[in-house]
Image (tube, rainbow, N blue to C red; front, side, top):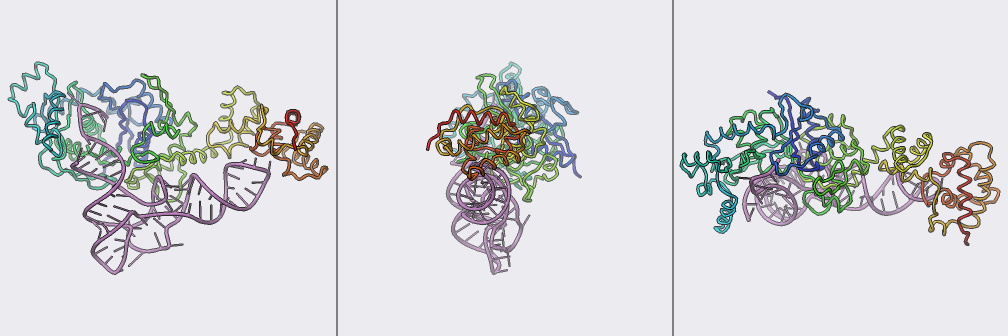
Length: 512
RNA sequence: GCUCCGUUCGUCUAGUGGUUAGGACGCCAGAUUUUCAUUCUGGUAGCAGGGGUUCGACUCCCCUACGGAGUACCA
């Protein structure tokens, strides 16, 4: 019988959400929607020393921006609240206690120095796997090596202690990962992980198992970095008597740096000049500011599409998928096993595709935003025409402004290389006559009208169009490249056109 | 070191014993164009290596190499 699908994304609020985290959240979300299940967000804040103010708000805003909706979370609430582990603190000790009572966990009083000494000792003895385990625990200070009343006395006297899982000495632990198949680990290679810390908080291992059980999580979809500790989690389900309710696991391939190898880091992103965080993030401590995809002009649906394809593919040759289409096509089986290098060029291509699919209204609004930001005066209908004129060549919304500025602002200077090559007496003559013709034109020039007018001038002087167009462009925009000039004349109008031509005639030296 | 995971064009990938190994990004070339971009067309380039199994392996098994992750009272 199938359980209801309930998945969770469980970030810890230690800073900005990494792009890999966004992908993990996305896969959880797609799976939940695809199966008609429930998407849950749980904040894993059991390490108070690493808590960063603002991180939670950041996570919330980032997911909302990406279009990842939450059915249950600290913000939306839900039947299994609270969704913050720090607020569930009370429940963990109960289960840890149960584990101790049943002989599956024990109290340990070792100081950090003693632990360090133990590791050194084992290393010196050339033990292959120096760790706190079945072999070494009987040499340590814990409830397995101390009389019961001494343990009690230490605890009641307030001596700090942790609770460790008692990993069986010899046992095959098997787990059927949905992406990797059967994974088998021998218990002897596992160490007695701390379950409850001396500050009374659980570690990830205990907290995630307890909460996943209590929240009736059906599938744990998380990064591959968790695979090595998954056997510990399996053991906990077993010890707690929850084997039947144990969720299915799916460990996602990692996102790697674009060159060389290794996990993608903030440093790699900076080195290559692309963001790694969905939103801009300001470190509340250092005040350091790092870029976000959103601020760099990436469209959320483009980023989502790109991210979805980083480790997953629908099996068809289509590449453009909106969120509903992703949901429709998604399946865990089609997630790859191998790590994936981050390719920003592909992300840019997606952005370009999505940008040009935006409606005329949206494109216009994007340009207007840039115009306002740059304090440029404009007529709304002009902004619209320019936006449509630029749209095919833009990758980011800010390109609309970058390439569109010439429609609103006269050239402040003229590209010297182009001037040297294309500006000559012949061109100047044509441009002068063209300026006259534009001024004398009784009606507002259309692109076609402008073209005809120019052609007349050219014919009269017996000059081919290719010889002067670049000069006209230079006169109108100051640049050597750009969108169609005749359309530009129509957009900026007769007067502006003529004035720009005159100014250029004035400013540019004729040589040759 | 130890444990686990992985390995198809530069990159993302399709491919589940018999394919000219397909697509996309990038790159290169050509066409179009008033330039650049767009668009279109074409091209470049790959099964890590070695053993098996089989009539036949990219596909299944083993080994090696290489890469990654984990190895905290962090998640």
